[in-house]
Image (tube, rainbow, N blue to C red; front, top):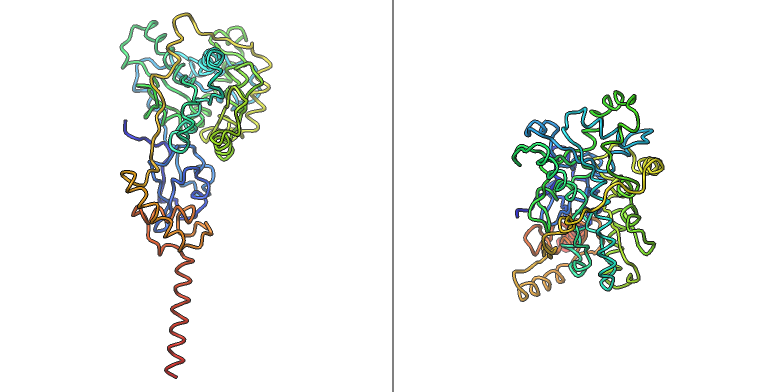
Length: 431
């Protein structure tokens, strides 16, 4: 399947600063001719460049609200993070009913899908404890990071679909049963906290096809729901709760540690923020972490509440989720007999060798030797002034034909100094 990216560049806003190249976890960004460029094969859509860009030149890609008009029957899949965007919410049903008032024909909570994933994960880990620790596959950016940078950890990935894809499958099944409509007339809309989810829909990993048709941004839905939520304030709590199908476990998936909490075990590790995630993965690869059952990793700081498509401050959002949990049952959804197979991935997650520098072993060794030679001529300051995140990255770019050695300004400065010195010596001789 063709590679898809949900983080793109607006070159008209880019000022050519080097903030983004120093923060990208896969060194997917270069600055050339005064503008940033994204190497799409390297990009994992973590959104770190969106957070760090002071000029708002990095843009998340998702579907517009107007895409609701593409379908006759529309089903909303709200991420648990949506609840954390509003003040004084003590019942998820208020938000869900507002989605119906907005124009959706049905609502299926992703939090409900999360509870089913938690249930099947508990069972799988108990049956395969000899392979521990397992790594969560819920965050698509983390899965992509492991695919391209930590292939030795692929076997650690839990072979279970994300809550979004699980919810989409069951929401579609329910929609067909209720309406009898053809598949193409039913639209499944995921309301997302981050652009990486759009990538996982357009270019899925280890599943044949995502049943999500469109990915909408929480920040776009947020203002549209507000007036409908006011209208539903007078609806009795019991009535609003009728469409709620999740509890504390599902809603808690919105924050770091929430997935681990659903496993009902203390033998876990939860890390958030892409830099912290990389440190944990490096330790896992070096076998420094082994006495755990499960590792939950979220690319966004604080978990999904820190996604770039949210409205609320992630720390405030986390506090709101903690408050909301007090009013919810422990769980609201369970895996029904015969549905277990619907929760697993269709195939194994495979290594994606995007950083391979040669066509074969011999070619790779030759190019690695060239990279070392060039690197020995560079100052190894990793300043980023050349437009690459490090001197090694510049050396690789030179060998791969993406840059020239003269792009190093320090090397140019030394060469200019030598030329000046030589000219000065020549002038002295002539005099």
